[in-house]
Image (cartoon, rainbow, N blue to C red):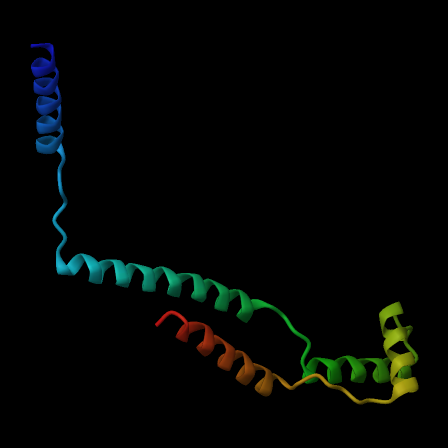
Length: 123
């Protein structure tokens, strides 16, 4: 008698858990939504990274030429040089002007190529 009651309790518990469990129905659009959501979040992260790289300041050839011209103009007009300008003048006199820095057009072309590579990773 106790065994039957025990089995009846187990049957009732299993029946309730079976009927109370809710199975979610999956639609075809759910997969598309999840795929689009992953792509959108990836693109958002990449665009934040691209904006950070765009605003990052880098020395270009034009900047370097401007600094060098400023030093030579100060020397011609006999104005005092700052410590940084003295160091730059010493390097210029020692090594001459041979810069490995790119001009802004080439630098932005390289950055644009890198931005496109980053964006293509999300496709």
